[in-house]
Image 1 (cartoon, rainbow, N blue to C red):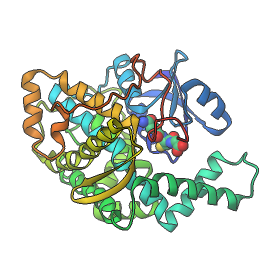
Image 2: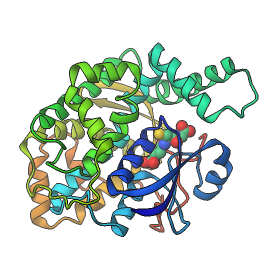
Image 3: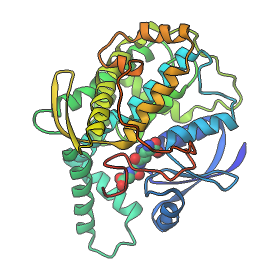
Length: 365
Ligand SMILES: N[C@@H](CCC(=O)N[C@@H](CS)C(=O)NCC(=O)O)C(=O)O
């Protein structure tokens, strides 16, 4: 086992769960340190208070799980989580981006809209990161609930009009995974890939542990419930993963969902960023979302996806296009122009100054 990574994190966090799963699978030892006594240091080193922040064994600080994982894969390529077939690898990265950026809304909705979930999670968060704050506990609980519900549910377009669609997004992700996991242990075959690691973000610390979505997962998708535990317990350090060289046909429902939801949202977000506005409306699978917050960070995510697509050979690009005949998908290869994010222009990620997901990316904006 290699030694020496340090994860500054929060135990109930989406992205910490994703990164910790990845480090476990790679057999990379790490120490987990709590955020709050170290928050000043973390912000000074990486630019935001987002978690996880990771210190590499050579002392470099990093944030943002996607470029973190890419970088670790280049340093420790075995056992790989990246399919060798470039077209299959592209689709796996696309699933990861959907898991990171689209399922976030459903995950935050379940955590902060439902009474049991919000009561439990506000206690966990206050007890983990706010014991040092001098205020009565009831007030701290109230503040956490208000901040999280206001910032990540109400302000992220969850309303009476969209709530059902937000919940269906979770059901559709579960159903699509069940169709696959009935036949094999991981999304692409016998080994965990970047697609599985990405899906652990929402499925592990949120849907798999928060009371309301956990019960839904247990009842509706026991295969996914089992996969969450399997992923957490996967140790591939001594194995040599082999991935498929063509698309598993049963990924179709998941790919349709990714394109119709995530790529449509990315398209409208990039268009709004180009218009230099702060909010945008988007119709996602016929459901009208209003006043979604523009995200500069997600313009950057789209740039990275388009760059990955542009790097494919003509043949591989044609294979991807054939597999994605869905609304939204053309954004990956068409000539839609949008204002560049101007984020990480020096290509230093994950060792750059990070930005938050919403607004201009500056914390609190
Ligand atoms: N793209 C980042 C996202 C990290 C992120 O948003 N983390 C959340 C916790 S899961 C956070 O720290 N949010 C800051 C906040 O709530 O103020 C990654 O992949 O690491």
